[in-house]
Length: 99
Length: 267
Image (cartoon, rainbow over the protein chains, first blue to last red):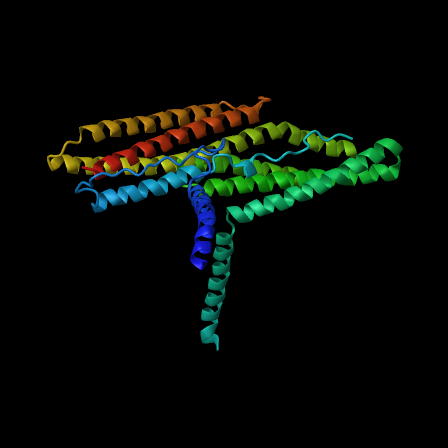
């Protein structure tokens, strides 16, 4: 008797359970996928500049490394040098004094 | 006791000279620049007082307003001289601290700046005696006539300072070019192909030559400034632009040298 009743309920509930599981699966999959693959205007992807190459025997040479360091330091100096000297412009003075 | 007297005197003389040397060492560009800013602010205050007194004198034309105007004008002229004098001193200190200038050129501008400061000091001393407005205005006119010469010297000194900065940087670039060239020669001596980097090095050297040319143009513009010119500031701005272009060529030379090193480091 009980088995018959349970079997009846199962026939009704089984499609419902399958539907719920299917819906949950869909939601889970959608969460994993990116919402949009296009970039908004103004967003530019960083270009990948990593360049792989086989180092030569000069790559670790002390002289080469010294030049490399010197170049970086000088590059900074060239960028920061003050070629304006705004503070040292001749002062604004009232030269034509009259009464 | 008398035995120690010469030693004591000697010690006092030593102390005196030590303090003189220390105080001379303390006077650097920053100190002179602060002096100039301080005096320039005093000049601006004096100018405000002069404007007010002049306006009162022109409105009321009384003896009281005349005396007030006379004193305000005297104060203004004295403070104007002081501001200009401290400005030229700051400029001299900046020139002194700049290393990339030839000693001949540095001394030439030291003399010119010192002459200007001496003239202003002498002019300043004359401002204490005039008792009438006419006398004061006559002294002011002397400065009015002298000021264009002072401005030319100021712009030329500033140009020399910028030239010194560029020279220092170019010397450093040339030094790195020399080191790179030596390294390329060493690599070639090891029977490795250096054709590409040698060609790039020539291009880096060309950038330095272009930088020198731009600097020469800038110096020519600076030297062309004359006392009678009404566009001294514009000419100086033009020279500054040329100095910046000269600097840009040095940056490009450095960029080329970096590429050479990158090439040397790879197989």
